[in-house]
Image 1 (tube, helix red, strand yellow):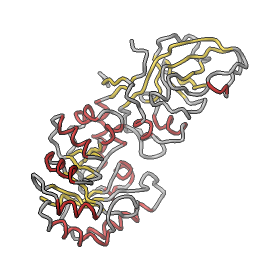
Image 2 (cartoon, helix red, strand yellow):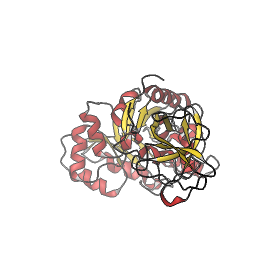
Image 3 (spheres, one colour):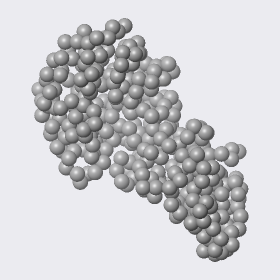
Image 4 (tube, helix red, strand yellow):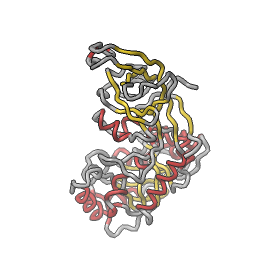
Amino acid sequence: MPFSPWIEIDRKALQHNLDVVRKHAPHSRVMAVIKADAYGHGVLPVAAAVAGADAFAVARIEEATRLREAGIDKKILVLSGAHDEQELLQASRLGVELVVHHAAQFALLAEAAMPRPVVVWLKLDTGMNRLGFPPQQTQQLLSRLQDLSGIARVAGVLTHLANADDLGDDFTSVQLQRFSGAVAGLDLPLSMANSAGILGWPSSHADWVRPGIMLYGASPFSSPVEELRPAMTFASRLISVKMVQAGEPVGYGGNWQAPESMPVGVVAAGYGDGYPREMPAGTPVLLNNQKIPVVGRVSMDMLMVDLRQQPQALVGDEVVLWGRGLPVETIAAAAETIPYTLFCGITSRVQRREREES
């Protein structure tokens, strides 16, 4: 029985969430976003679980390299493209597709001697002001790309939605209008929708959708999406149970004092594992299928919990920090962050395992 924290990945939940994507966007192909080690879930097991997707998307060439070295031959799109000759040559060798979003990438594609031409997507900046070209340059840019000998073909045109997670914000409609105007008349595949677009903006679906956070069972909105299933459960165990007298401080800084004589449990998980230090007292964890609150300040290896509702708790009892029975959205809200940062914050010392049943 491990007394260190672990994350448990539910393969069936990942497959279920991919089915939810297809239900919401039945006429679109699916490019599963598995960048950042599949949002902290483990890229290789996730790639195996969602192998039914039509393609994968990653952020960087190094991530694509890892997939190819693992024997994955599916279509892969590198969302940030190539930034120097070495990356471009690697992309050519790997046979992965590249996003072109900056003028310097045109020069690179024109000058580099590659083993074989690469397939590219043109990215338009419709209002996020991060990566991409102005929409009014679309036709000119496509003509330039098609004239480059280093390009096998242009696979499509894409953009990214900045505010789609807020269904009351009309800026998504503005972005969709800008994109539609820029690509009118083009005979190329189009891609706009992230998870929020898939769930909340059907007009964004187009030819390809790019689900990320929803694949992992978390909502792109401020509240959970009931039809999604959490793919990650972050858990640990009690390693101590003790009585603390009324008025006694608990944890670093003594900023929380016991309101009465009470049992306090110590859980083997802390910010050294990815459980945020800024998590406030009162944040729930799940012990024996019952919510109990965190007390005191989270430390590097441990956090403390109020056991007054669980006086029978014993050393070795499992504690769920988020996942099955405890939505990650609840924990993210308590820490004033988003599920993405919690998932990606899990550290390398946390054990990984796959859930055997779902």
